[in-house]
Image (tube, rainbow, N blue to C red; front, side):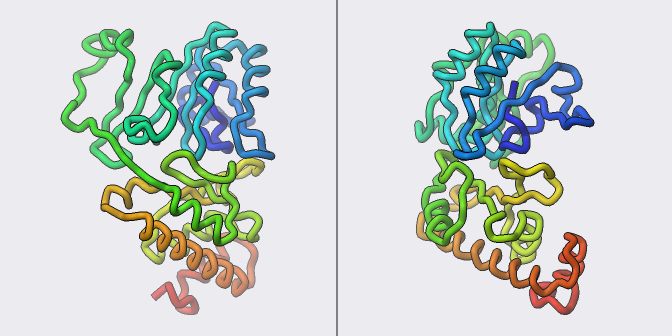
Length: 281
């Protein structure tokens, strides 16, 4: 059981749609998602517990792709124990924060902790559990490049605070880690259009689904991470300026949307890449 992809989970944690098994983990294993409480933007642990009691998984996965809050590891440990499951934490997005003791430590409660380094460093995956070391090497794989394993230290509070000051709605109301997930639906705009405009201004972020919507093709949110900026020495003051730049990009997106005659995404994309749109040059 892993966090559902439209609710911030990772594709590799068993994601499937009603019509198709998308991730290899959903093809080779029987998977069941758990979700957020859409009223709070937080993991619905009560529903996770009820579903786990019925589904009886062998593995419960903590960790996410677009979830800005800590996981309740003691609660998840209790749920896993009740159904005889292992608890695995995928901390690929927050390993630097765990190392710096900025967020909760998953090691005390997890059977397996895994991460990657290539959010900022060379590509590498790491399983932090001695009990499976020999099964992986020399049993299945070669040795990792240990000299590339490093930690990350990031800060996102200034960015999140400025975005909220500007009136943006953050999923779960804030952030405990290195990312913020912004719900743009109250503004009448979507993540695909905002991402396009910000790409044209050389500001890179993700369009991202937010809780409560059906499609990931034209999602209602954007996901913003801080590692690329913090590793370049950006300070809190600079993060406030970044929030202002993003806000300006959203305002430009709204103006552009109002100037397009058609309502489809392709109409918007055609307009903003034409000579009629100033940023196109």
